[in-house]
Length: 418
Ligand SMILES: *Cc1c(COP(=O)(O)O)cnc(C)c1O
Image 1 (cartoon, rainbow, N blue to C red):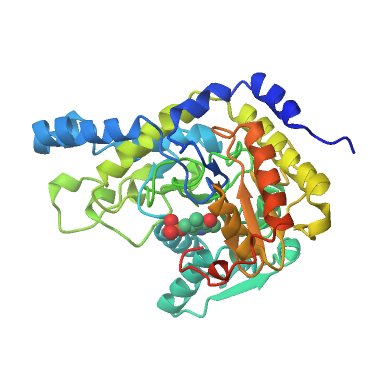
Image 2 (image 1 turned 180 degrees about the vertical axis):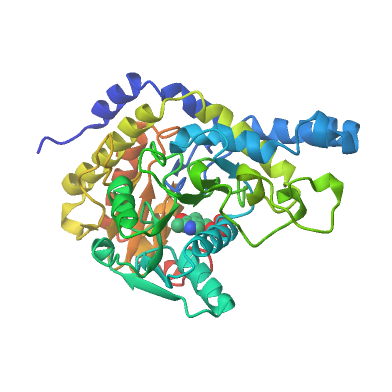
């Protein structure tokens, strides 16, 4: 294999149609940030927009802001903007609550639509909060529902007439492997099951095609590849055909058909609005809005193409520069540009000293993260990473290994957030 040089990466940066977008984010000079899959960086317009919302809208307009500044409708207006990125239609997405809470709502709604069935099917490799939310709802319902967990390559064969809901995270958070959403949704529908897709590591990372796949429900978060800030508001999707039959249990006043009638009887609003429970957290929504302004300027296909190049360069360079250090690639080598996609926008390497190696890299300013038991995870967000960043990161990785920098007592103790 011909070795990739730093010059090759510089030339790719010169020709990169997304190169100018990097300027739009705060990124510390000395940092190579490969953890945007956990928490995206701050778009430069966010502090000003949030300050202006507080000073001008809240400060001067006070309660009039709910209408005058569009606060009340932001969950819907932002949902419509987000729809483009995930292949949904207008009126199918709303920005509310958190991913876990939205999962609870979608699970409850989907189970209500399949009352005679008792199985929720998912895969063992799914993100724990998703599985915990199922366990919570099963216990709380007390109707003999059961979580059926299988290995990810057995999902389709585990579908049968008992399955009410198939709940999957499209992109595996540890390995970056992507499920074929269209094929699996079709298989679920063939046995009469509904699907809930978690897009946490998909939204903003590559083009998602919910309606092309005939997906039923979806959830996702805004603080990873969408850069809306820590704990930023999450989103949910309900396909048009289910909207007036999907009943979620958090029947707060803002999902009411006429909240300001202050009626004592709950009557769900039509459409996606019944998925809202409470007054929206406007400060978080404004930050998300500013973050979307940047993403709205770019074409998701360009993001996908660049993401594949960044990941491929990293994989090739680890092979050529670090082959003697025993890293094992657990991310699919094949990626895909159009559906079906096989890999997200991250690369994961397994190494027995993975935790300490990640800490040593962080000390050098190369920020990735670690997932139990031995996975080093590197996210490649095309909006702000340069090709040379990938080259430099691998050279740092080689130095950490050559000089055994990971073998430092300070790196042996696990922190509470990894
Ligand atoms: C990050 C992530 C979440 C986050 O859930 P919160 O409720 O926002 O804390 C949920 N599911 C998956 C698959 C994730 O990757």
